[in-house]
Picture (cartoon, rainbow, N blue to C red):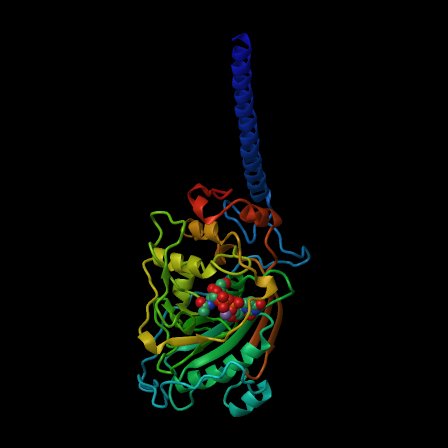
Amino acid sequence: MLRFHRLVTMRREGSILAVIVMNVVFMSMLFTRIEQERSLKNEITQNKYVEGNYLLDDFNEASDASIPLVDHVKIVERNWTRRTSPQSCPLFPPGLKGKLDLPGNDSIPPSLDNIAGYHPDVKLGSYKPIHCLARYKVAIVIPYRDRAEHLQVLLNHLHPVLKRQQLDYTIYTISFAGNGTFNKAKLINAGFVEVNKDRQYDCFVFHDVDVLVENDHCLYWCSEEPRQLSYYLDKFDYKPLEYKYPCRSESAPERTKLFGGAVMFSQKVFIEVNGMSNLYWGWGGEDDDLYWRIWSKGYDINNPYGENCRFSMIKHQREGYNRANPGRIPLVYHSIGRMPYDGLSNLRYKKLGFQRYPLYVNITVGVGKQHKKMHDFLSSDFNSTKCEKVKMPWE
Ligand code: UD2
Ligand code: MN
């Protein structure tokens, strides 16, 4: 009996001990996490790139400390002006072809020299109709690195379309310097600022290098509201793509719509949403973040030309330095709250090159790299099911 009693007591002591050990482990994990957040918070507030309460850039550093980052992004605001003078080009461009031939996946595009030869009227990346006044000035802004063949295909395809649409336009590539992790959204922000310095435009099309419009009745004409041009994509059988984000607060859209590919903004609205988030390093999420931004300001995908705007994407593999961003779900979760201080307002980059080629203008920029602590934080223990617990260290 005594033996049995001792056994029970030992068992009880054992389980108490186990509970204590578990608690200690749990508490230490919690403290580590709190400590991680605290030190990141300190880092952010002590950081030299922080002005007031705003986060700047990828938290604190460009990959290369010698890169003097631009101090302030100044954009001369431009009023929307629709050109409707007697000289304006017709409302229905006369030379449109309708459905277009697309290059086969294995076909080799003409060389840039040959393409330039077909388009002597495209001068240093720009064109405007000569017999009438173009209704819109459009900048095509392509985030770019190391996709020479796609660029050839796109230039060969798009110049004739935009010419027939009687636009006054320039095509820009915004090249990512170096071989670090890609950041499409930050390239677009930097491109937006630089292109505004080059010339005044009515609107901007942020255009993947690998998407091709299938019908020239899909006009690249500006609208005051943002527009998703490539909503109907071959990759998704041209079905409107909407998805539920696993993490979503009440102030966020219930369904997120595809907002990658080719999207159009007036200067006013792109500034209104503070551009794109600078924090998406690697593949994915930045397009959804942008959709949440425009949605929160009362806009939507806006598709005036409906299924005329079918697009096809050149088939390709994902680059090794553009791996899926593990932090995209928590970042999107906080998208709308972060909008006022993460975007054009805290953009840092360095312009490293500017070349005018016959068919496009290239602007090379250094955009730094993701801060290591942020990288570690975002790759730590998030997953899509824990999102309601996700709290960003600065919030
Ligand atoms: C989808 C979206 C794209 C973007 C991406 C997630 C569509 C049609 N596309 O594209 O807009 O939201 O998901 O990040 O919905 N790029 C380079 N070099 C690189 C990597 C990227 O030039 O090494 C540029 C290029 O313009 C490319 C774009 O970034 O088209 C998007 O990258 P992607 O084509 O690899 O991604 P994808 O096809 O999944
Ligand atoms: Mn692609």
